[in-house]
Image (cartoon, rainbow, N blue to C red):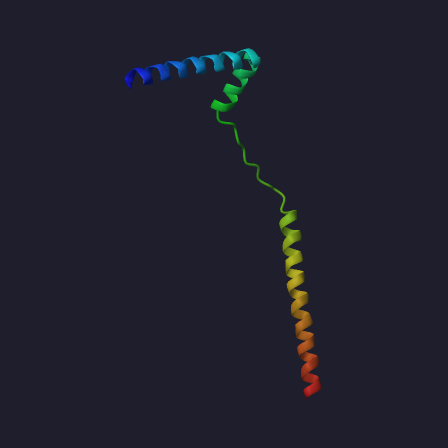
Length: 91
């Protein structure tokens, strides 16, 4: 049985080598541009410089804050007027 396994392994190895040869003949190997490979290696291995920018102007914060305040104030004003008008009718 050991001889049969050995023969089977030899056949598989030959089949694999034949398949590998066919693939190598069919597929055209591509040689990468060395400059690109070097550039890619540098970009992948070095950490990028990250800088955080701070906004010096607070215009966006002021506009958003004013809008929120105005919305809350107008909503409160509408409810307050409705409350006063409701009390007048019942009194």
